[in-house]
Amino acid sequence: MKGEVLGEAGLHMAAADNVVTAIDDLDAGAKIPWDDGTVELDEPVPFGHKVALEPIEPGDEVVKYGETIGEAVEPIRPGEWVHTHNCESTRGRGDRDADAGEVA
Amino acid sequence: METFEGYPRDSGPAGVRNYVAVVPTSVAASAVAEAVADRSAENVRSTPHQMGIDPPDAARDQIERTLSGVGRNPNVGAALVVGLGPERIAADDVADEIADAGRDVEVLSIREAGGTAAAVEAGVELAQDLWSGIADATREERDASELVFGVECGGSDATSGIAANPAVGAACDRLVRDGGTATFSETPEFIGAEHILADRCADGEVRERLLDRVERRESTARLMGVDLRGAQPSPGNQEGGLTTIEEKSLGAISKGGTTPIRGIVNYAESLPTGSGLVLMDTPGYDIESVVGKVAGGAQVVAFTTGRGSTTGNPLAPVIKVTGNPKTADRLASNMDVDASTVIDGEPIDSVGDRIYERLLSVASGERTAAERRRLEEFAINELQPNELAELRGGA
Image 1: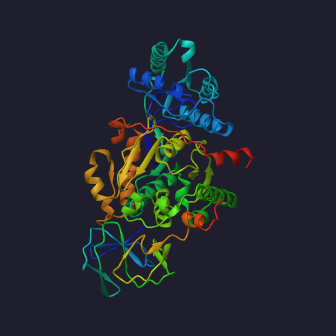
Image 2: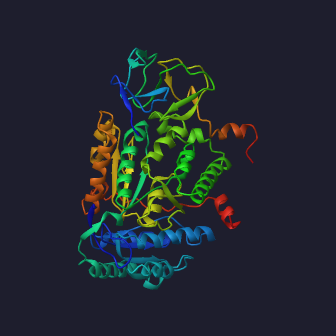
Image 3: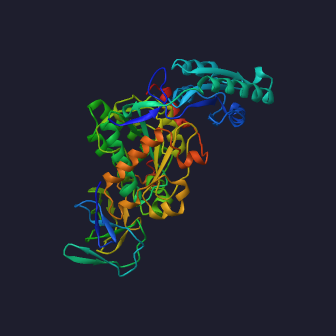
């Protein structure tokens, strides 16, 4: 697994990824070079968490390691923190299955 | 060809340590086993656990497989099996299976010995006799292909998938290239990445077995009403930046490297030596999962952690690897390899080479941080009621 460090702020794991991992505690306003321009952070993003590099619409795949890690559940702007509040697994939502009476 | 200095055994691969194992057959004998190991020679180690004296049949099979596997681990030169007396897992049965691997074995019954104090006294004498039978063993140069390297991750964060796991994976690839065996497990952490693992299976049978095991773990979680998103990644994982189970799994599987998957064995089942990358079907609980691989024959374990873990094992050295620079600093006394240099630009392969060199030096006798601190957790996986029902149904 290889990655590319962007501006000493983020680690981009694979070419297809639409998110980058913060390699430091990043402040709001921090800039990450991307696609001949920069992506500016909307909010502080802690070490190890992800930042969107491109606009991601609800239902769109969030891609890291070149693979789908989940889907957006609200519109995500470039520079926005991507985490459990706006990205969900496409697998286990046992809690919802239970609500829907799908669990025996 | 890469080599290490190991203890040759009458059968099977060489050991990287030379221990007398004191193996209790139930919780009722665990305290005596611990006391015997404490009062005996330095190289006497116990494996106390919490399993009861009368487990259901399927659980009995798994416990016995684990205990006899632990006693047959190449790091064990001789074993003392301790029972209270009424256990369904008879100490004699476990001892016979260990003896079949060519090890000297003694059996101690607490009731027959006349109670706890008498049993501890008799046990210390037996353990010391067993030790004197193996104390003369000396290390010899052995081929790296004799090594079975178990890899585990715990306390994961985003750096696990970025740095520590792929670096350990690069070390696994090197060992496999040198003819050895690498194994990883924690089936719940394949969920979301099983399609990638399936594509790497050596044949259709292994592929089918792998997908079946993942499905079984996923349905078990659903049956228990577990929200996989809430439970995996765990709240700690989420704080560390992992958002979904897919993200965690994609990072987790990279610790096994990139070679084809040659097989998948049951919990604590014997791992075939010299066969490349083999998976073991275990739960995600770190200590139980490490013990399963040690029972399967792993002589050395690499344990990656982002947020920090201190755990070890009584019989196999555990090499701690972290990719998190803060953990490398804060838990420096518990870590063996700092892989956080990946974030500063050290290539994964270069960190992998460092881990492989450490694997060989630990196999040759260098002590790990967990060994120096005598961190020796031991636990056996307990089958859940629905798993027992499934096994009873002959599935």
